[in-house]
Amino acid sequence: MASPELLQLIEGMRATAPDFGAPPTEVRAVFESLLAGMPSAEGSSYVKTSLGGVPALECHHGGDESRGTLLYFHGGGYIAGSARGYRGLPTALAAAANLAAVAIDYRLAPEAPFPAAIDDGVAAYLALLGSGVAADRIVFAGDSAGGGLVMATLLKLRDAGHPLPAAAVLLSPWVDLAGQGASFEGKAVADPSLTPAGLRASAVHYLGGEDARNPLASPVHADLAGLPPLLIQVGSSEILLDDAVRLAGAAGAADTFVKLEIWPEMIHVWQSFAFMLPEGAAAVAEIGTFLTTQLAKD
Image (cartoon, rainbow, N blue to C red):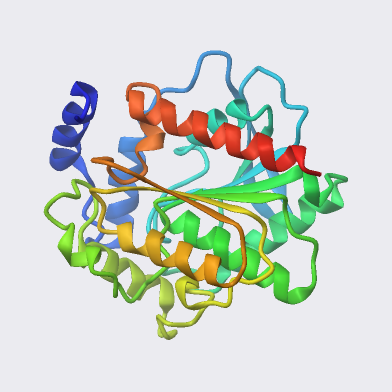
């Protein structure tokens, strides 16, 4: 049964969620306003930095950060969102696994369409390697479009022959920009934050004329062999449910280790509400366990 906190959150999201079908400048303003209301954990601090020319934000949780570094890719349909706005989520994930965290501000569409965001992800990771952090001490994490960007960045790095990070965590990943999963329409009533029309509009902005089935734009169509272990978390009340399920199937078929968690009644990126949502805190704890286990293997 859904917690009272979840029911309250769903009610609020139905009233305030941004319309991703609106002009990107309007989406950004509404989205950043909502993100600004998200609290920072007690003891956390943030420092602006740069990785490979990509603006970034160091997210410090005030605890042990010795195990490695989490590189975070925020959501926002490739047209909105920011490292600063999302700062609480990478901070919480890093704290759960005793990691340092840095979130990047990759370029947004339509001003910088596909593949600019992927190029920024690659540049940031290579800069992290160049700073002396070993690949087996780095993990990726991302939500929604950021989850798709995590996958695309991994694919680009793999194909270029670069060492890959130790693991990746994908929260409600958007990995099929053509919206071909059954849940894309079938879960539209249940999903309080995303709409098929909004995601289709965002996809047009991001693709800039590129084929939606390009594996780097929609990694559900990619060969996923040779990637690091993946943890995918998705809620059953999301239009992106099938994106996660199909991605996990493609990874498993390619002999890539993947753990898929489908959380009953959960909504899009519920982990970001761990500060108020018991299910969010539980999901973050699961992520911490997964990352700790993967890093211990090296």
